[in-house]
Picture 1 (cartoon, rainbow, N blue to C red):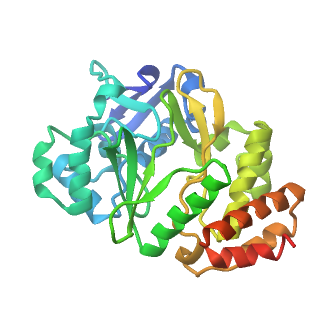
Picture 2: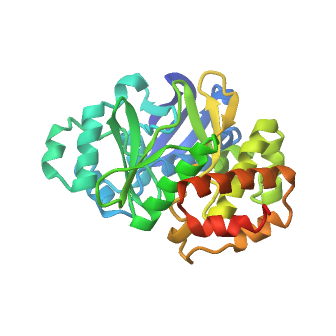
Length: 337
């Protein structure tokens, strides 16, 4: 049996024990700095959280990278061997007696070499790696990889042209509305690849609502419960969440599951700072599996208030100026006359 320590931005927050790739003990030491999902978690519950941090193995490029660098497809092993490092939060883990500061754990040049392997299948790029990349914990249904460029971390994603267009153009509209949105730009001339800029500041971590909901009395996935829970955090949380819901309705994003929205928290105090910006719109508009439909907007506007109509008017004004996402503009016009 091996003993491990869980860190949040280099501060020890819990300990756990592993036997034969199975977590058999989990003991928090600083609950305020833990994800809400782990506050009362058993060893089994901690295992579920840990395994979610392993690289997604549904993609061939990801599987090949892990086979070459780690030699295992066991999700617990992958998470431990990569120290659970992720750009999207500040958690890491090390076996007792071992420790590397988070800032020194992920070398940009080595990570870019790993991303070269994922993006262009460059075997020669792996020769630049000294070991398993710690930044391998990226899940999701599309091929993804982080790259360090222009002084920042960017998440690259390979997907269809329709999905890339949806993410880039929806971001442009939300940006012009001055609403919180993750930055998306095309990467490559064929427009089937986008990159998204890391939206975290130093000392912050993203916690998806799927984990954060366990801090509320009612953690269910009911839409009204989610709105009530987020609204209870403050008026700015309600405002930003309703903007996300309206955007999803207008652009027909039916994939707003509990892992692609959440909150930003302080790694130093655990305080909830703000709602995470709107991100992951790659199944919206024409990229929606069923094609675009105004039906989601119709249902949303049936219970809309004055603020919703004001926000919809702003969205439509931007769409008019940019001359993009025209079907969404036609749908929105019906409610702002």
